[in-house]
Length: 356
Image 1 (cartoon, one colour):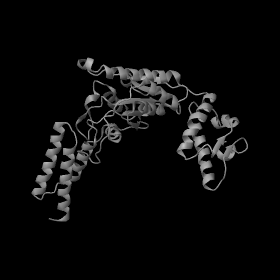
Image 2 (cartoon, rainbow, N blue to C red):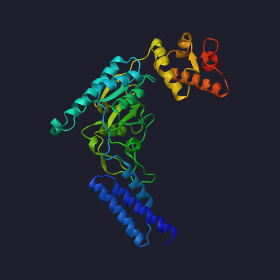
Image 3 (tube, rainbow, N blue to C red):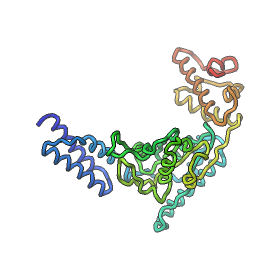
Image 4 (cartoon, rainbow, N blue to C red):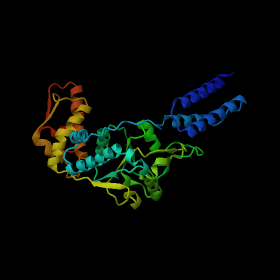
């Protein structure tokens, strides 16, 4: 027996052990076992299957999915409020809406046994609507953190191919799972928070088809048997907490909007941005770049210039970029041997922000 044949036998054995070691739907497990048996039969007659790698890859994908594994929710409104307040300034009404939403999840879980005959009834799916930089994506992160769930994000900007979501059949070349299945594998649980980001930026081609896939994803009457074309077996998405974002809702189909609860994100005033910059963005950015309070100080008088160097914008993206630019330049000075705390003031601001 040659080296290639030995390697094939080892791989077949590995696949058999992998299938035996995971919890799968019984009929799916039998399907995988039958595929491995066909490989063994082909090997026995020295007819090395050309699709050996394809079957091996398929088994790896199926066995890597969280068919039964899920995380335990933290359904504590006090904890959720603390997380939201620590991560986001203001947004009082938005935070209250989120807490109401989490309260519904808590109540439903507590009374689930009482309504088993009725099937699952869930709160509408949140859709944060607002201009760039108003905190839509970070709110989704915070909800996942508050619940103690894993988080995955799927960008919809420019999306024009529905197979991006549903996957490509194994009968086609370059077959692979779609982003929904990939998100579940990445999260490692069957109940993560999955952010469907910027739904309104779907490309015009195949717009209606993509919206049709979204209806299936977001409808509790349908998503318990979502079929990815590559996996080719129903996966229960009913425990996934989907959250969506959009700059506006005009490009989202009515059928999808009917399954969403839009929440308008407000624009920030300059005064609010200064507070956000001081208390949220600067400390977070300094920690990320390894800086401490002994390395950097920003004079209070120049915050208005950091907030608005080039004119007004609704969100905090420009503010985040400016603070990140300041911190990078400070880090560079320290690495080059600069001693003592660096204080950013009226006289040297132009050295740290190019746009100023």
